[in-house]
Amino acid sequence: MNNTESSACCSDSTDFISEFIKEDLASGRFNYVRTRFPPEPNGWLHIGHCKAFMIDFGMAEKFGGKYNLRFDDTNPEKEDISYVEAIKRDIKWMGYDWEDREFYASDYYDYLYDLAVKIIKKGKAYVDDLSDAEIREYRGTAEDKTASESRITPPGRNSPYRDRSVSENLDLFAKMRAGEYPDGAKTLRAKIDMTHPNLIMRDPVMYRIRREHHYRTGDAWCIYPMYDFQHPLSDAKEGITHSLCSLEYEIHRPLYEWFINEAEVFPSRQIEFARLNLTYTVMSKRWLLKLVQDGHVSGWDDPRMPTIAGLRRRGYTPQAIRSFITQAGIAKTDSMADIAFLEYCLREDLNRRALRVMAVLRPLKLIIENWEEGKTENLEAVNNPEDESAGKRLVPFSRELWIERDDFEEVPPPKYFRLFPGNSVRLRYAYIVTCTGFDRDANGIVTAVRCTYDPQTKGGNAPDNRKVKGTIHWVSVSHSVPIEARLYDYLFKTERPMEIIPRADGSPGEFTDNINPGSLEIIYGAYGESAIEKAAPGDFYQFERLGYFARDPDTGKNGRPVFNRTAGLRDTWGKIAKKN
Image (cartoon, rainbow, N blue to C red; front, side, top):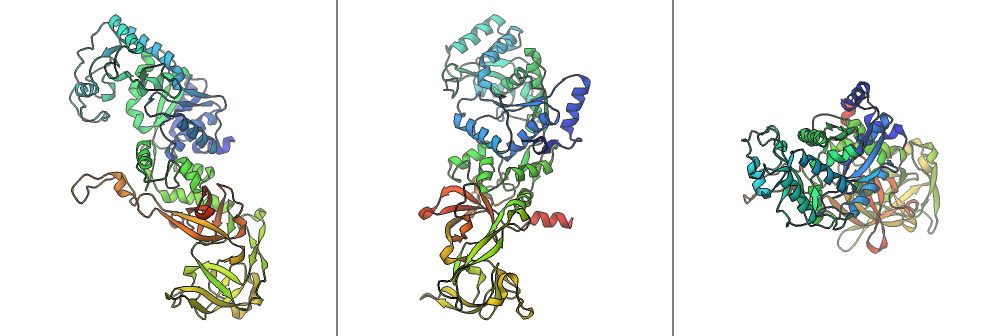
């Protein structure tokens, strides 16, 4: 990716992260810039992660530095190689190439173990026999392991094992490493301050015993470092100058600095920014995993998911996502972005690049009675009015066409300008037709509309007395492509799905109560013009009058190609922005 595109998120020289980096370079604290994106391979990336790596990588590019991709894979219970591959695939799709700078925290296990021994030798860590529940009780946070810095809590109490000698701690830690104790029997904890107002600093756990098979190291280790221990030391090993992370890690920054100081390693600097929150969306891998595991969605790449893979499958483009994140900006306080703005950025991008085609989702046959049987005429249509270089195409026109069922009314409502008995409309790119009647089946359902065409009105031409108010789209029955259309709406019916209310029976609710039951509608009997017959997965179009659609990797019912509705044509955000 070129610097103009990739650094767009960080192009404003006044953003606060840039100012910190400039100060560090000017003061001589660092003479280069190196950043990293450190995902845990326990799920697929979502659009919030996209903001993170755009900032991580963009800042390095902005200051002529380098960036690393490092997998913080120290929790074997939840990690898998499939997540690693999905993460790399998504980042590459977004346009970033980390070249030969791909790292894994699991490669640092010996290095991390040696640093833990070093800290023990300094008298700053000890082996503890307390259980997890007892550790929380002694810390003063039995009900909440992640209490915030502002929470008023009583001072913690020292563990009865806190004053073990250095030699005893070294011996016990070596035995932990050798597998002489069962899971959970002992932990290695930092010796800091059990009365510290920041609960994170109350003797945090550095290592725990877990006999879990690791996807990379196998069964070589039975002790695994905790995130707060390994993360700053992995940064230090790679010479990361600026560890950019989301705001929830601000409370962890004193611990980040404590481990770096006590291990006496490269002094990486942590800087926090506000994470991305989006209306009608949940943005946590834990909640997204629940949606997948409980079958609320078809998988991590379900087009209703905010994952990068889900957005890609839905029909989003990297350019639209980058534009949204760039314009949302970098802030120091959390806020909620309107999903309508994301859709606005998408439409702005697709409107310039998407080819126009015609498709009919809910077909009703239109019969042109004065058109010759078996005759086909190829009419010229514009591929994209925003891009002259896209050229034109030929669309077959014949006696029998498919039109949208709601483009005909036997008894029209007020200001209805489409087809009804006696009314005339223009068929897009074709002729003006006048409705002469319609057919019904035995149940009274309209099965076909009949009309005549005016040959003098081809392609927009019309005498002054033949001006009409309505234009509708169509496809030729004999030249159409059967398709399956999947119409997606927001997965949640409320702007803030995590605001949970009790259920009617008095039981506590959960965020899945806010799922929108109408978030997916599948239409099996749709038709498109022949131009989409060879569409490959990911190809996107504007279905005229209907919205933007993208070819899905799936094959639908009866082998039909599947097209996902990416977004409708209506743009509420753009209209509001123009008014303001």
